[in-house]
Length: 265
Image 1 (tube, one colour):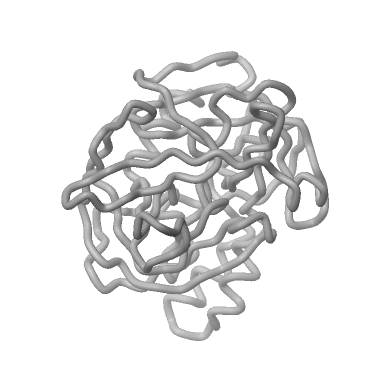
Image 2 (cartoon, helix red, strand yellow; image 1 turned 180 degrees about the horizontal axis):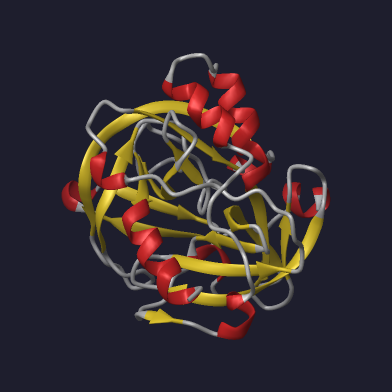
């Protein structure tokens, strides 16, 4: 996994939005379409969509007795690295555990076109092969299944209650460095990205200034209670660099929940 993590032939897809601002979605290319569920039986194994491991941290966060470090430590086991072989290289992104029985959500563009075994690496060092059990190409989401149990899922928060200025944290695998955390705020809500040849347009996105870079795609955007309120999937670029400019976007939890209700029903 370390070799894959640092010696990858990463692909990026560029979106052009209003004002010719370049938008990069890391490590893959999306395809047009709607919700499609494959191998639905694998997605219906008994599992829990809530996180008991985070209960104490969430409760403490609400009364102000937990630190950011405590919150991050509780969330980190739920965020994974996703590596998919594509075009002779490895497309690498992030993912989030959403059920104890091995369901992991990521961006569709991270795993689209995978020509071999997709692998998921966990913070405790375990690496497991994964299969795609559902996709929503309209919202750039994919559901993976790994043959592991007892995982720590993130509970879904209420993205509809977000306000501009709310504190958020981006947790993912930027630049293949492994799990990293950045802090920011909700910069804007209901942002839209225009469609390109490679990717459908999207609407209703969360904009944040939390540092997000290539490899963060499919990772978690969490609130200060440790709940998943978005899946990071795009960053703004200057046109000359694909590095972080303080403008990133995430698919809101309300869309994530709708996808999970269909793909993992």
